[in-house]
Image (cartoon, rainbow, N blue to C red; front, side, top):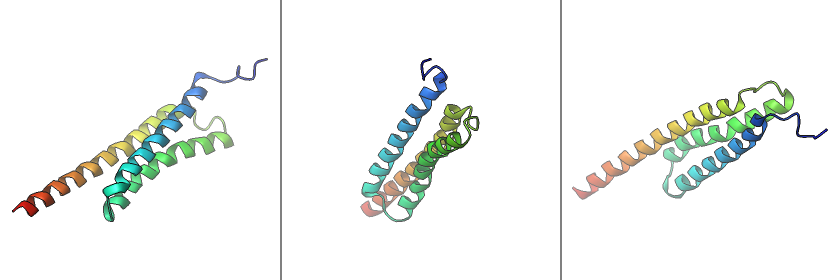
Length: 107
């Protein structure tokens, strides 16, 4: 018997999703870490840590009980998508603040 016979296609998708979300979270953190200071850096840490916590939660949960996250890829997409949307809102607010500050300096 092949040891991979018991694995479903979802078992192959989850590690790829985890890797993609970890790469996405580190990319956002790297870009933000360069020029964001103070409160903005703390605000963006919330969705970035959330993006890292979701795959970790799924991995730990499935190692304890293999049936606990049957819809793990969908769960990861929903949670990480929500955190990514939250990060976009923070980025947008930071961009607006930067433009307002630049306009005030020009006057």
